[in-house]
Image 1 (tube, one colour):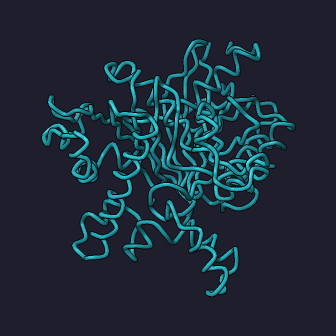
Image 2 (image 1 turned 45 degrees about the vertical axis):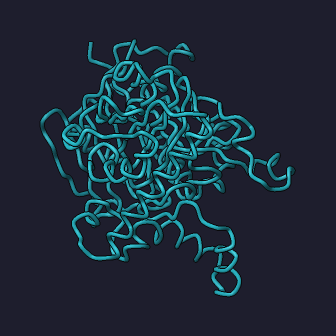
Length: 398
């Protein structure tokens, strides 16, 4: 009997990461991965199966209806995998609000609830919904699940989640939620095997990628995070500003005469490292550039990361470990080094050789804080949660 397969979809604002997993009834094993790049012209499917890699241009165009484009993606994937064997599909959904406390089957009622949260995540939520509906249109009988970035942070105390605004607004849902929860759940689980000495301790995980945030974890549970009400909050990112004095927004909307749409466009696409440097939000390009603006962007990035680590350590009441993850966190020793330099007073000491090799443990034996580099895998987390919902619904892979 042919292996049953499971697909995962991790929708961003301009890409969709697709994971292809084999099911054996007990676990999901990755056998391939793909990325649909909407920003390239034409849109491109990057596919990896074992050692083989393919780059396939697509004819379809991204829009409000992704069915035609996803149909083309399915046809291309079908040349390499038996898509008739797909048992289920799992999706990453950025915002679950206070409605969802774990992964769910995506049916009409849950989709309506997810749609009502769009205003809380205007960049990511619509893209995820378009993708879910496209897959549903093409495979109406396919079992689909949603995994939420916010649910991992539901363990945060109410005091941490509260903003200093009138209580009625908090009760209406204007509060700190936290994001990148699938990544934090995966990495906190991986700590048990890779760094058991800190797995049950007070740990800050730095998820540093194009979108970036940090999370304070104690005994594997989220206690605080840098992102709050929206994915704009916290530390500077590739094109998002991170923390911003609300008076600045009032100034944009008042004296400068900007519209809400203009400010939204600027905050999501023209701030952060891109805004400070004036030419790029990619830390790899900024590190190669010797101009003052690029250097200032990197310095601001690492300054804010170090400051947020200290704030989160205050929430935890101490710090046993620091973990770097995601694209920048896993692969850029210079960024880690510059963050650590600002934390010497806290007892953070890096082993230069280990850091340069992206080793799992990069702190010195005398460092008071253990520092690790642990790769994240959001798609694996989505697949595991999708499989758990399959089993709960008594629809085990056959």
